[in-house]
Image (tube, rainbow, N blue to C red):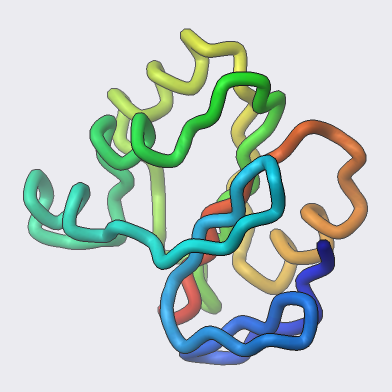
Length: 118
């Protein structure tokens, strides 16, 4: 599993381009991000809610790498941060281009949430 590239509005993973935010599970499965879980609480997908954190987290995950967008606008809510801390899951928040590098280099049991726009 390798993330090849990103540009505003898309991300390419193992040669396949996606035009929406994605979640990459422990198995390497790529799914569309369920932004509505955060939008329902905060009115925006730029704040990750506890509900979305629960939906993304997988048992056995050591780290979640969050691509915060091309400009870095996504952040964790305090409740989502507490949820990941409770499950001893390290959180790496970086602009999406840097998060891709972190994901590709990491040997940890990892999941990713990649925001592809702002």
